Length: 450
Image (tube, rainbow, N blue to C red):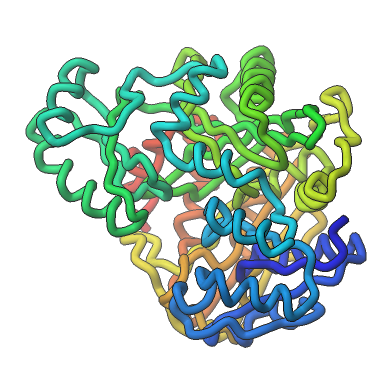
């Protein structure tokens, strides 16, 4: 059983996990860097300990220090949140060796699914449809050129160990491939310590749709419907919604059942997300699996009424799932927008001091905050500082609520992407559900015309 939990993360996700711990009467411990000592989540926790300097390798990636604090605070479990160490198999193994319950899947699964080439092999064996491409790393540029010609341009060049769009680039011809290969390989090596690359056929104007899954230690698994995450910039999500405005009921059920079969086949446990690309004919193809809680999990919670963090903790504690697939209902429509400290036109980060913060409040609005009205937004971390989730009985009602809420959302002292989000919410293409992954590129000039 989980009796005292350390949260190996920061910002809004740390605050989110703390709320569930308090609801479950589980004492929780926060860790923080020097840059985060005045962050809201630090004072929310029952106990808080300084990790080190502001750089991530001095703090949130400092495994030995995190485990030392967990032992000092008499914790028996660690929740990694998302990002940082959440999909680090060695960290999960270190937790186990230290006698700590890691709130997530077993390390071997994390390791296998963290490599996109290995994940392709596993999901292919589990029966999921794949985009045409390689299930092995590329040897060199010559191999890449030959493979791309066989697959047929355009193709997507990807880092095998990548994430967040790093090392990923659409390639339209051999000249583009030659220009892209070396640079993306170096970026992958720099960010992930692994420069392996592979190639898949580029699906043009796809939808990015993911299935939330949950599995216990007794072989039972369910899916919690889908989330559409197609509106992105630089291959990173900006707006997410549930359910998808594009899928018909047969396709969403087929996707959900396929995802459950796949995680049962690989012996997956805890919460996870299988991400798919979906073409214009609603054919879906495995993209990747995230073996952790997703940034966008609140919209699933809003339409199902479930607490995913609580379910994670219960599964990790050895409890059987108390839910069957028939128990998981879907009600209303939810939309999440990510609030970034960045220029809404260039997408460059905008660190600085928040001088005032005014939040819209209504029964249909949910806030997940990593800052307050006097926070210093550090340049050392991801520029996402908050999320806002709105709900409506219908998608049109949720969009109306979103626009109204964004108009009342004020952050002063730094630049944010709120103007972009507001324009997206009011764009006719968004209202119509025309939300393919090229949405921002396709409509950017119109969105930034003010």
